[in-house]
Image (cartoon, rainbow, N blue to C red; front, side, top):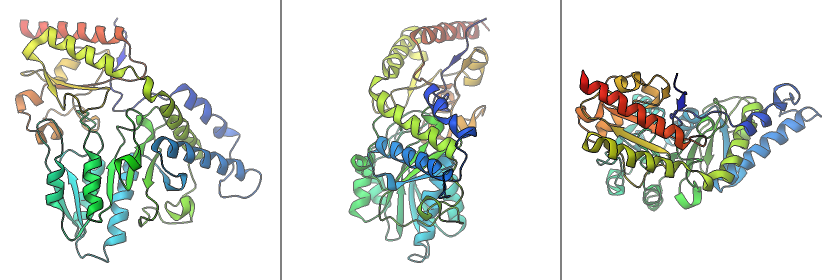
Length: 380
């Protein structure tokens, strides 16, 4: 029996031991309502504010600019819908700009806003998954209220030129949002260096718990709350805070800030790619930008094969045949389709995403397994 190997860290990450330990006291002992002013509530409020500072430290922003959410999807919805409802009195049809390769947590809220009368432009990407800032500039209209381009793609790992895009947005007085769920914790994410006004964080993508995230909102930017009720999160998100998971997110961000420079993912990934090329030659194709991509992400295609069949031959391996939210689909990934990847190549795409615990021995075992599976395929 082969050792089970997990190479799907872009889909989700295991909870870090330090995160689990930090969360434990808030399961039973520190149970107070953070809005209460008595002895039970104050420690809960202090824990939330400590976590807020930890998230802010990772993003190099002020703690008051962090809003806790239930995850990356809510943060994205808050950014898009918050801008729409804050600006719809200014324009009869507020206009949004995004890209063709965004996560459904961006594209679906955009489609919903279209049903309310919003206008939408999805700019294209090139064959390596890159957005051209020139296309963003050309898409701007008088009624454009938000530009939202992901920081790094979840499937191929391509890192977008957010600094240039945000500069264009700023020149035109338009807020800029980036979905950084895949990049936070893997590469440096500094909101001022990027120049963005809104940025999404998802806890379970950086060794924190599922069900918690954050939205960075630059001071002074007006957003209509997604959740209405009491004045939690400085009036920006109603509902008693999820202390247990917020503490986990803060600890995960603290760990990410400390471990960012120590990751071995890039070295292992590059070694894996070189060995794949040596083993398969032109029978393996790289998807995404060869350099401007996440250090842990390797999306490759085996032309003429079905990725699901390849992984079925490796039941001990956890990897993805495309977007984590559409695993098991037999159709070409919408991201690869937007990149102009052919059906023959796209159907054979496998995403290997490495993590902190990935070892050289695991990479070698996966390589050996792929060689065996492909050899059997040729025999049939």
